[in-house]
Length: 223
Image (cartoon, rainbow, N blue to C red; front, side, top):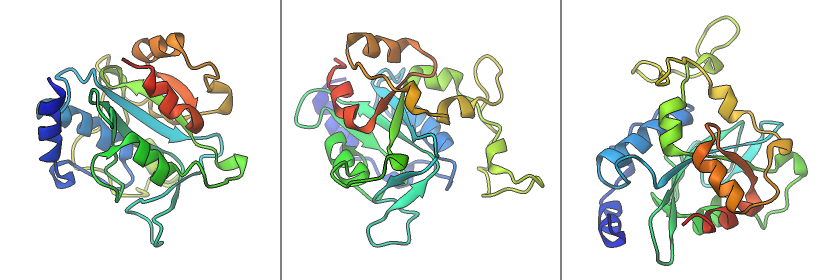
C-alpha cells in the first residue's frame, strides 16, 4: 500500500466506526487492529501496527485529553492504558496513534500524541513515570487472551459492564494472559535502544518495554 493511498483511507476514518467498551481498552485495541487490517487502512497482516500498553509498577499513569476525564484538561490517572501505533511511511508524520479514548484527532501523529497526551515537559514525580510495552500487532493478535477476571470484584460483580461479545481466546487456546502484558516494571525497561531492541519487538511475544523519553527514538529506528 502506498503512503498516498493510506492518507486517503485514514482521512475517511471516523472513531464511531470502531467498537468501544469503556474500561476494556485492551479488547478495544485488539478489534481496532483487526478492523484497520480489514478496511485496508493497515497491512492485511497488521505488520505496520504496534500495540502499546502504558503503565508502571504503581499502576498510576497520568494521560491528558482522555474522554473519561471530568476535568477541562482531560487528565485521567489510569492503572494502565492501551493504544495502537501505526507506521504509515515517509512524510512529516511517519507514525500515527490510534487511541479510542482520546479527544485528540483520530488518529494523531505520534509526535502530537506524545506532546499532548504524555506531556513530557510536565514535571512528574517518578512514581508516575510512564513505560510502554510495545508489541508487534501480528504477535498480539495471535497470542493475546483475556477472560476479564481483572474487571470483577472479589464478590464476582462486574466493576464495569463487559462487551457483549465472547472473551478473546489466543490461537493456542490460552484464555487469559492480560497480566503478562500489563505488568510493567522499571526493571523491564530496555535502556539501550538500537537494532537489537528493534529485532526483539518483531520476535518476542510480549514485545519490549521502553520509557516515555525513548518512544520517538525507538520508532525512528524501525524502517
